[in-house]
Image (cartoon, rainbow, N blue to C red; front, side):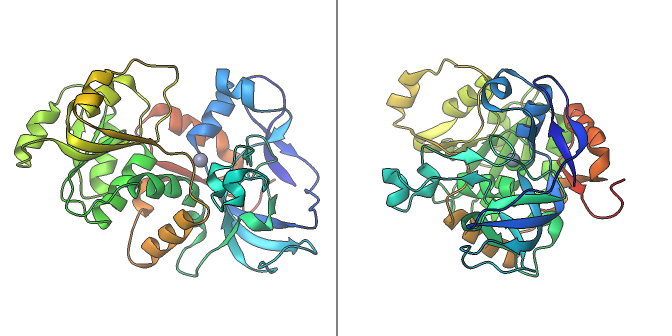
Length: 345
Ligand SMILES: [Zn+2]
């Protein structure tokens, strides 16, 4: 099969030909239709410090996918050949306290498809049947290919009650923009999104009913005054991992405000904890998706009218993956989706 590989421990990815994965008794084989490029894939491409420590080589990369189940292991339950599916990219163990309590997303032995395990940027990917999420007819393959990041957005946005609340989102990448759309759908009053990339802010304004603020040259307090906000944001969703954005968020929360952190800071950063204490802020880290409550919620949100298609800005044949990564590096892009149908040469 054709696939995209990290062949050697160095920068770059390669278009490659590899044998089709063999499945175990509890696995299924998915014929991939579409995949999404993720910031994680870009880190693996660039072979930064995190990637060097986390990713074994050689490995097929990629974890955001939709396709069709074409083979089912003899002990795989609840999955049949021909089923359209996406799936949870975090493969969990079943021995830990958290797993045995049903909190699979908290399992400390979690491994990632396309990070520690063979990935989905391929014609076929092996997935534990447990991880498979069947797709309703109303969710097409390209939306199916972005459910992993939409799940990050839903998991973060629904960390707190949003009905009638004013929400600050720092970071207008695809997940921040989708979180804005979810927050609006979940009943937020005002949603303000900040970034330093005017292209991304413009995209946010097109996809969701939000107030974009350019953190380089616009004052967040002016935006708040224009919206008639007096005391600060009730809920903060941090999607950038940037120290300046986290500081600005803490400075602009109401007393007793609630913050969910999804963005990953590239290195440790200083926080003014005095402000956190005196404002009695609640801060919660978010990782991945809740298995499988987040999947249930996001499919239900999509079926009841949540529209995030506008966040997909690039659609490319899989072979042109280099152009997809170039678009991600150039900024202003939303989600890049690769098509694994047609002639893969
Ligand atoms: Zn991802």
